[in-house]
Image 1 (cartoon, rainbow, N blue to C red):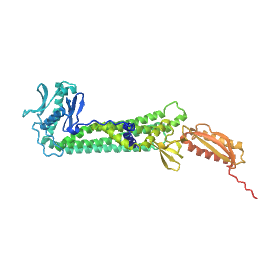
Image 2: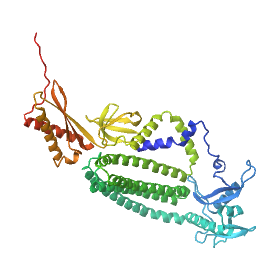
Image 3: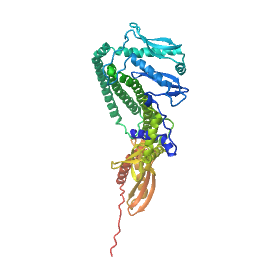
Image 4: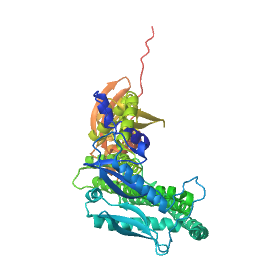
Length: 546
């Protein structure tokens, strides 16, 4: 149900409205990534592009934008020159490449220095052993304008970035480094196995605690709400344990993902791939961990808020009974809405981290929405009508209703469907868009319309008195007193027919106790009439012989 709700949200976004109005959709601007291998962005009068080394984004450089749109931008030449210089300093292996020549710099004494060329700060690569100097890049006015720093300040900042990235790459290219890391591999795998064992042990304990909480919760009717402190504590504890269990699951996945990235990083031909994956993996993992924590925190908040709403003071008995029925319905609807919003935020954030254009996503969603718009009309009606049912409080989980000739107890209610359990045990699922007139027998309070046919020869006054005493005894019984909202009323003789004299009475009860009270009324009335010697009416027929 939640996945269907989210799919509907993703497909039927704003672009569908644009298409319905006959307007053209904004198409994403053409990207230069296909032509030059990287994305160029226009910032004012400057073209900007990132410098990437072994899958890591180091910094962003700038160059004046060309006046002629057909000309090759100056930023392309700058990026190609800097990339060639970096590859010359540290040869970058490919995933399927062969042997890679080692760098000609000493890993222990390698450093990036700042010099000057034509009055502009220039960064060089060198070491203490050979004193070989290789130029890396020259900083320009465009770089300083883009960063908002002076050229010397920006040179110091980029010097630290290049020193860290190139120093690690040169060290990792040394044969001794690979053998040292390879010797650490058994210890890393052993540590991963120990962490996995601990996480699995904690998950098993949490599963046992969750099972104990669920068994304790079985004492309460799931279609009703218990306002006791124990029921509230169990609901909150179940939400907290569920959140902790999912956090441990995420921790288990992240542990082995980090180990896999580390193994890729020590192999020369997969180091670039490891850097590309890790730079995005960390951000995606943090995003989804935050979403998971928010999901569980909001689940606890929903439980606490609905419990506080149900337990609010200064409400009469009728309102209190209605709150007991509405709380599970509102809690489930709020949980469904929370799920849709958090998943939407997580997916949009993940696409942004993966550098997927949001405009392209919306355009694809618009095409899909246009293709399924006719098929989705009934779904839209279901959700709109479901929202109106909740907003207007037409019925809730636990109500006894009649919809489209189907009578039963509402067992589940979402924004799309209503499920009714009929008396013979069948579960009927009704789309909310098909719901018209609703008969609610348990809204706020319920009433038993009791009728009994007595023998035509019975004493009417005596029969009424016997019935009144039986109903008063039921209302004064400590076991049944909380379920009866008002003193029972015997209305008198409702009709006289061939079956006898029909007496009628009204008993106003709590919605959830109507069926039980009605069965007890029938039992006590039958015993009372039998004890008083009053016979139940029997249909009579007159036979005329000719």
